Length: 225
Picture (cartoon, rainbow, N blue to C red):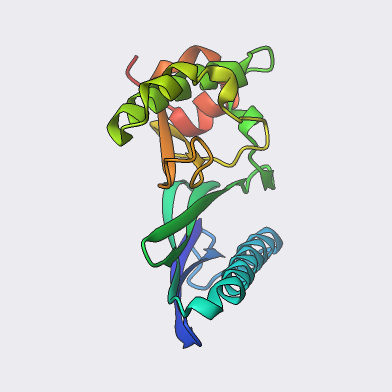
């Protein structure tokens, strides 16, 4: 059984304030009272810790570029568990850097199968013969068009935006629930005017035909089409 706890780190250095929420994974056998040592768990915790350190280094680099202006920077991380079963976990960590009115954020997904003892990749969710990247781009395109309108992007740029403008590959970060595949796009990644972190949620029931047997059996399970 996979368990997740929260560790919180808060401190201030120069003009930077850190609010760091860290997910920490544990593993426990069904009838055991104590946590079980697990090499894979330790590896994932180390990966998460290193990603947080990288983020903090990025924040410090930003401060060094801006320190002449004496701008305060708030840096924070927050996480959410999208899916968790006895053997599978999908969680996401949002890394945010706020300075003045600027908010630069990105999200990274962590998806693992402890029964298979490996990371879950985006291609694992789909049939081998499916053109899943182009299929996903179609759903992303529809949602992004709506977002463009909400953010007041000029009609000329709206008309120019096409599916080919969407940068998506097999290594794209993601996470999932039992109902949605979630594809995040960092600040300005979709468009220079959209500074917000975007999370495009694609319902599994919309792409059910293209899902792999692994996804249907282990993640989606029962779904209403």
